[in-house]
Every structure is written in structure tokens, then in C-alpha cells.
Length: 141
Length: 141
DNA sequence: CTAGTTGCAAATCATTTGCACTTGC
DNA sequence: GCAAGTGCAAATGATTTGCAACTAG
Image (tube, rainbow over all chains, first blue to last red; front, side, top):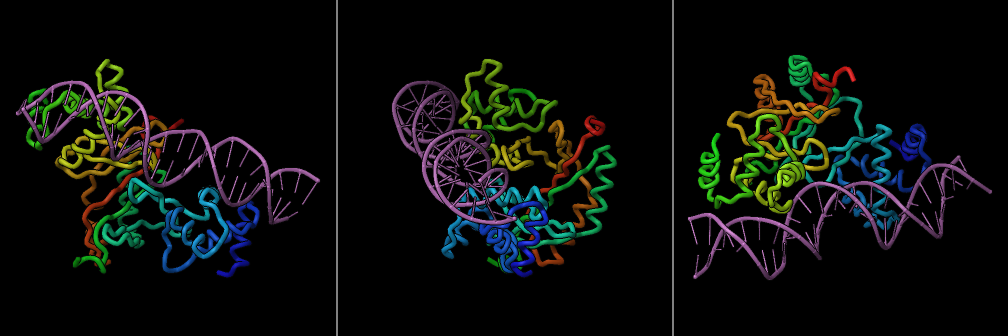
């Protein structure tokens, strides 16, 4: 995804194209770290010499979330984690040792969710499903 | 469950039996509201004229959680919700309108979790699974 | 008696907001 | 030019902690 693509995306959701917005989006788009906290995004950008404020990072993230560009998760009780919104739904496996986040999607589970909800007359509008444990790299430690 | 049972439970996990501890446990054991926040527990007890501090409620809840007597959830990003620890594992459906919490347990989903984890060489140690939507009472509103 | 508990107030921590200044269009 | 966006500092809200007074065993 080029910088021009990002700018267009921001324009498309009705926001002005500004340096902080492009920077935050680029950061989240970077392959290695799809899942980041506001603080991490801020310190990473700030560390690269970018003149950006933490409050702005939070504001931009909230605007992006409202616009549907990104999604927000609360894997632990503390800070929120953000990721670019994918088209396809997916859930997460979070490593309690190294903090790595892997995505997965299981059709059988998705199907069962509907069954469970309808059995309780519950109108399900969304769900949050996270597995906690040790990723392949941290299994032995 | 009698007051004596509660006192014994507290003693069993190695804590002194004190008024705040018994009060908090009793409150969580009350049938109607199995899921409560620290703040709610505090105001409820406090409103009944009990001399208890909010900080103590938090401390007691944390001690109970460490002792395995209760479990803690983060249904939204904000305040934590506590409930007595049941023997059987279960997940939750949270009503986004009235805040009601229903429990459910689906063996098929539990089974799939293991399958998904092992497919990714992930050593699953726990999970958090919450459905958000409208409960039967709030479906129409 | 004395280590564990408590209540209160002050301290944290993540996140939000007020405000004067700056910038996109 | 002006509304929208920004940085900073101060405000917030949930939770934690320091500390002197209190109580269970």
C-alpha cells in the first residue's frame, strides 16, 4: 500500500489528510507489528523524530475506529491494542509470555456462536474471542 | 450458603475472617446479581449502612481472585466485573443495552478451541469469550 | 501481643479534554 | 480564511498504594 493509497483512504472516510493520520496508519500497516497500543505507536513515531503528540495518536485512533479503518481490542485489562480492520472476521491468540498476537478464524466456531445465541434468544451483534497461552516460540520456556 | 460456610471458605484460603471480606462475598453470592463491579459492590454495601471503603473492596476482590474464589472479567474496556468462581467453565453473553450478563457453555466450541490452538502450535492456557448484543428483554427496543 | 487489615487520602496509569495555535483545502 | 486538526498541560476515572489506626487469632 502506497502513501497515496493511505491518503485516499483517509479522504474517503471524510477526514483531512494530515501528517499524524498518515503516520499512524503507516505504522499500523507495517507488516511485522500489526497489533500496537497507542503508547507504542506514539513512542515509535516519536522516536523516529516525528513531531506528534500522544493525545493526537489517541484522537486519530478513535477517529479511525469510528470510521471503520481499524479495530480496537482489550486483550488485558490495561491498555487497548489497535490493528487495521481486515475485511474478513477473525479472532486472536495472545502469547502471555512475549505478547505476540496471532490471528485465526474458525468457521465451526463462528457457526456455533449463532447457534448458542439463538438458543438464548440473544441477538448477537459481535463478539470478542481471545485465546491466552504460549506461542510456538515460547512453549518451552 | 450460610454465613458460617462463607467464613470457612475465607479461612480455607488463608485469609482472616473480617467483616469486609464476608460482606463482599455475600454480595457476590446473592442470586440476582452474580456479576458486579467493584464500584457497584461498594455502593451497594455502603448504601446499606455498612462501614466499608472502596479501596478495601478492591483489595478484597484481588485477594479473592488470587485465592481462586472469584474471577474477574473485562467485558468493556472500562471497569472490571467480578463473579464467584464456578467449578464448571463457562463464557458470557453481555447485553449492550441493559448490561445483563448471561452465562453459557458450549462443548462444541470448547472442543474447537483445542483444535484451533493445536493447529497453530499454540499452548492454550485459557480464553476469554464474550458475545455482545441484545438480551431477550432488550431485543425489541 | 502483633501481623494482617482497614479507611482515607494521595498517587498511578491509560485515556480524554480544554485551549490557544496551526494547517488543509 | 476558516473550520478542522494539533500539541501541550490539566482533567478524568478506574484502580492502587502509603500510612496510621484497628482487630483477629
